[in-house]
Image (cartoon, rainbow, N blue to C red; front, side, top):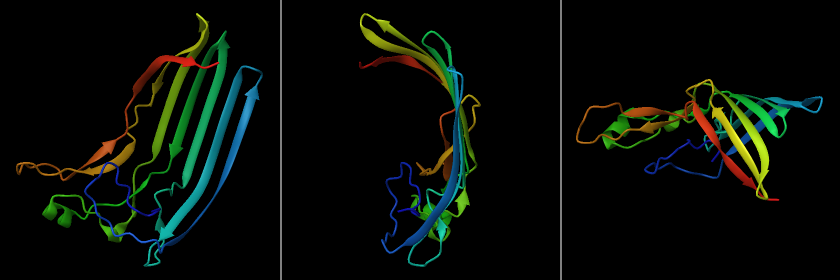
Length: 195
C-alpha cells in the first residue's frame, strides 16, 4: 500500500495488489519551542526522511509518504486581553506520483496508470502560510471564541492530484487535468467551547 498510486477520487481504477513487498524508512527531525516572555511563542521543526518500498520485483521506489524535506514554523502572540494572533508556515518536498499510461487510458477512456513508473515523478513543492486572529470572551455563561484569518496567504497553487478527464460526446479536450488545492481563502467564525 505504501507504493500504491494515490487515487484521489478515482473509482474506476484496477491495480494488481500483493502483500509480498518490503521496504525501509529512515529520517531525522530537529524541533524547537521558544518563548519570549509570556506573550510570544515560536515553534519550528525541520525533518529529512526517505521511505522506499518494493513489490515482488524488489525494486525500491518512493512510497506515498516519501517527502524528503518537511519544514514547519508557527508563531503565537498574545496581543491584548483575550486576543491571540497566530500564524503557521509549512513547506514539503513534492509528493511522488505515478503518470497515466496515455495510450491504454485513451483506448479505454478511463485512467490506467503506468505501472512501470510507480511514484517515479514528483509534484512541485508544497508551501503554505496561514494567519489568524482570535478573541476569547464570555457571553451569557458561554465561553466563545471569535476568529478570523486567511488560509494560504501567499495564494500558492499547491498540487493535489492529476485527474483523468473522460471524453463525452467525442468532444476534444485534454485527457487529464491537474487539480490544485484551495487558493487564498478567508476563514472566520465563532466557536462555543465546553467548560
